[in-house]
Amino acid sequence: MTRFAWIAFVLAACGDDSIQQPPERMSLCTADLAVAGTIQAPTAPDPTMGCQPAGAWTINIQVADMGTCTNVSSIPTSITVNVTGSQHNEMITHTKVSGEDDQLEINGDNGACNGSFEFVIPNGSQFDQIVIQPHTGTFCPMQGEDGSGNITCGTGAITSQTITINGDGEYDLWSAHP
Image (cartoon, rainbow, N blue to C red; front, top):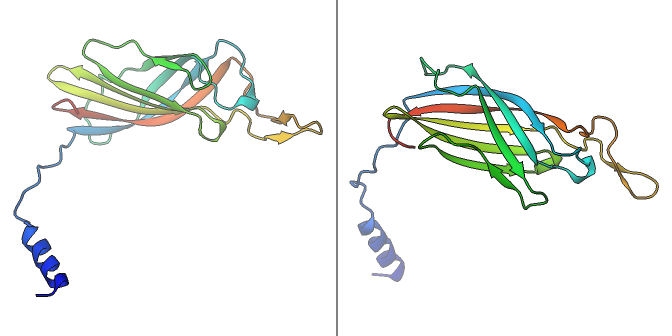
């Protein structure tokens, strides 16, 4: 038997298609969410610095599409996330309800602040999973340079302490912690 034939024989003998994979867990229902709100920044941002997420993110949540859910009354209508610190040294916090797990992240892609917030909240014997992606507009949408080499932003730059956020998300109801 050639070396190639031997390797092919061993690989074929090792493969066993009879091993069953566990079934994929499925949520009990899924709904689409829309989010809108504001960031109340401690100071007016410098738009030339891009994403500056510090402040209180007040995120209002609405059901955009009930999807496969018949009842979504347990979804909070508003969530507040607080961001302190600056320049890659931020702390992101949220006041949790009893038994809640959360995962909170913000990145500054393309000069905007993009949140990725997940909340898993006990709901009787089930669990609500809320995943939302709030985002700002671009802080410096028309970036350029003046004759002295200073960054300019043109019209539409974010310079107010109250910054508008929008986004979307998803709600899933689970029979066990996801």
